[in-house]
Image (cartoon, rainbow, N blue to C red; front, side, top):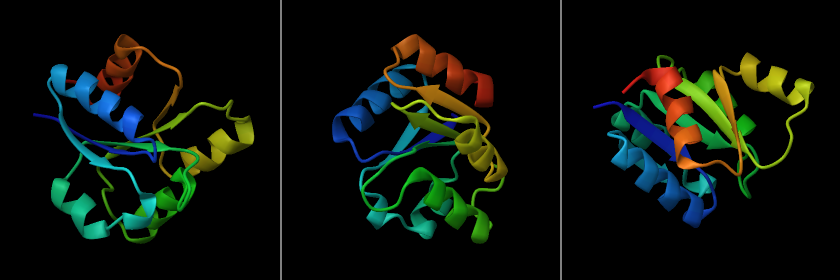
Length: 123
């Protein structure tokens, strides 16, 4: 079973991600508070895909990507960023330079999320 780890500070959205992706056949790991980010927990989960919110209270998605890159963590994991705001080309370039493979824009429906995940890691 493919594994997806999601980091977002919105608990309602995290639960929605979990429900959608679990029903689609993925194992899902969640982290609501980016301040509680722990390299060991993420490494132990061994995700095939990491989905990060761009804007969070403690550490934003870009900062978390930098930490992953600095610590050589999850180098084989695909990374996707999710945002409710329009990402400018400069923001996208920074994310791509940090290893992001794709983007999802909120709001999204279940099929959009599932198709984006399938495109990155299959089923």
